[in-house]
Image 1 (tube, rainbow, N blue to C red):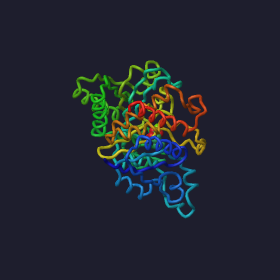
Image 2 (image 1 turned 90 degrees about the vertical axis):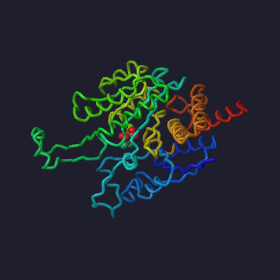
Image 3 (image 1 turned 180 degrees about the vertical axis):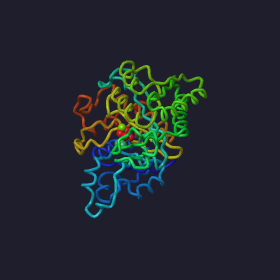
Image 4 (image 1 turned 135 degrees about the vertical axis):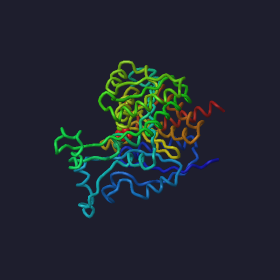
Length: 371
Ligand code: IPM
Ligand code: MG
């Protein structure tokens, strides 16, 4: 039996308690793993000037995959103020560790399933089942930004209209980056019996970058004639997702649009307590709830751990532990449908760990029935 090596990165804020809840469920299905704790997050930025220390990167490189909770990020001026005095003035700048992990390990697929679990009182409508494929390594997230545009930029005639003191963020979209994310979306559609892929863009304005993305989508669509294909403007799809959410199946888009759309889609199926993600590359992956660290709830064991539990389900799926993944998914569905435990977001008074216990209980009960 395999014994997986999992880099365990709870981070801070509610990441810690949600990971504790997910671990209870992983243990309940006897997932065979060794969990290796990794340092990540705000604390390490303050103390060491690096929220993703190199020892943690080494840990990622020596494990099968990683499980990540959440971490707190703060705006640049606060980040500078909270840095240890001996590290100040060294030109260190904070960059989101999750974004760095995605780029460093080339985890180009951000997979975010948003499915309305039957009976969830928070469902916007029943039977919504949208899967967002977000490009995870390029676009607006490349981290090439200038608080003031460098003088050299103004040698370019297209820059003539831009004020000298403009802040500039670069958006880079490559043909290969687009091809592989769109291809991943079509492959997923094929393998999971999905009917349609929708490519989301803003090509009427971002002609260069979205043009490349759309062209890649159209080329891929031609290679998958059995899957319906359509395109949608990012602004329009925000409206249509609210109007007719059941018209959408697999949605594929660039990095920032995917960030925004996946929050919208998570809200359709219950909000951030239900949104989970896989950051997936060719040989490595990092699984996480889509929500952040919610510092105001930290340590209260109040928030809904279902997103984190479903991230654990996705991790097992990716590792080929299909039976365990299905069991967890069914147990979560059952708890939601029966309402045995409901956290505050669902209108109940259950704690984070009560919810995890209810899932474990449903797992045990399924086993008793199966025997
Ligand atoms: C997400 C988050 C991140 C992102 C933040 C924390 C940098 O919002 O995973 O969706 O923007 O990608
Ligand atoms: Mg986001």
